[in-house]
Length: 276
Image 1 (cartoon, one colour):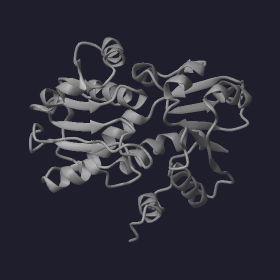
Image 2 (cartoon, rainbow, N blue to C red):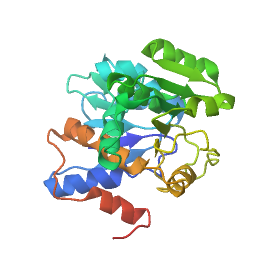
Image 3 (cartoon, rainbow, N blue to C red):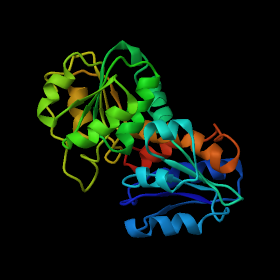
Image 4 (cartoon, rainbow, N blue to C red):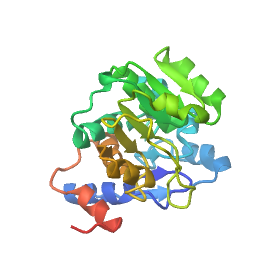
């Protein structure tokens, strides 16, 4: 048994993806969605110590808190300052990892193969766990500059201090300056998610050749991606990132890679209202 925790979590397609892989692999297992109240997160994690579940994926808003609750932390989780993956060892230890950066870069490779991290500055909207994971991965991949744009400057400054001099901080009112000369723009906020306010963004200052990515996948075609595609820019959707970060998570939970025989993207698209 494994699962995903977040709040909200009802939008998550992770159970669709993982349960399809479990079925195709013939594994006698199940993947569930859980939404503990913030005050109960620690109690839930403690109650799962020892292997009652194989592990948990972690989504908003618990990625940073999950990291703090772990006993062992991988280098990439430490660099990201957040965990999107917790694995429960039989000895009671909780192991934290972060596959978001892997998922982000793999999604770019699949949907924007011409993009090179070293090709220019990358703009990231937000400074939470998802944004920090993306920034850490891009710094490691060779991005010359990562420009964090956040309404709360102090939070972005903390990320920049942790990740080094290549990470720069911009206020929301400096967004046009941040987008100037950028090779990519990534939305790592919850703006645009179903039930949340939309992300209002003018892309005029963003170079035409820049790739636009939105981590939100419900809706799949967010207002940001629609605007970017209408302007002729290459886009990367959040569903691709979800699937790519799920692959190493599945292997961590069940000891084998996901079976290639099932098209989980097609299954997810059908759920989202895009039948083949």
